[in-house]
Length: 283
Ligand code: AMP
Ligand code: MN
Ligand code: MN
Ligand code: MN
Image: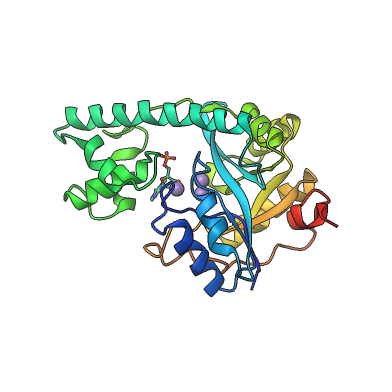
């Protein structure tokens, strides 16, 4: 059992549990340190902070920032960010504007293919302020266009499919900079999910470190054992801190559970043992 789960989502982005519900689940699962890391928003953190008070559970204020590096989307986690940082808030606002534009484009493209009013439909599934492709997927499933959210992604949302919209988020360097300016630790999320060769992953990591990034999510709910071992090697080669997170989105995906994570492979230096980790800074 790993006591740390440093990647999770709530209804503030595309998770299905409220921030308070997520905290309750994490506590019940035996998690001791939970990072709430919603996509491009800090909106869930106040409610989550309220919910942990009195529990034997520490909340790390986090965020998962959508960024672009060499024409591909990369997710950068910010762990222990100052929720009052003007720089970070302004940056996330930029991303939310990009999301709004993309949502309109997705809706327009789906309408061209005979699926009307998808934006209104997606917004019915959104419970926070930020539209996500998952909300489109939920709408398409509920309207009978697909059998599952995963089916929607395959048939509608990826390159070459009717609801695909190419998007430039913000350059990865800027995302890392915002997180650092907010006092947080930048970590590359689920690095095995980008489908990169080892050489290209090395270049991504080098650019990330150059920008001020410090961590790699070695253990992830979306990594196989083999991927975890490969990412551990990358982590060690670049002397990054290793992080561990489920990327939990709610009970609808029962194969991903809070806190049910493998231990970090040997030789990885856990990010929670870094000098700059919040609990240590207080010593
Ligand atoms: P967005 O940030 O709006 O592009 O939405 C991305 C989100 O969609 C991710 O954070 C996942 O939660 C979800 N997602 C991406 N790919 C898939 C997939 N193949 N199956 C199910 N959910 C996915
Ligand atoms: Mn998501
Ligand atoms: Mn992600
Ligand atoms: Mn995530």
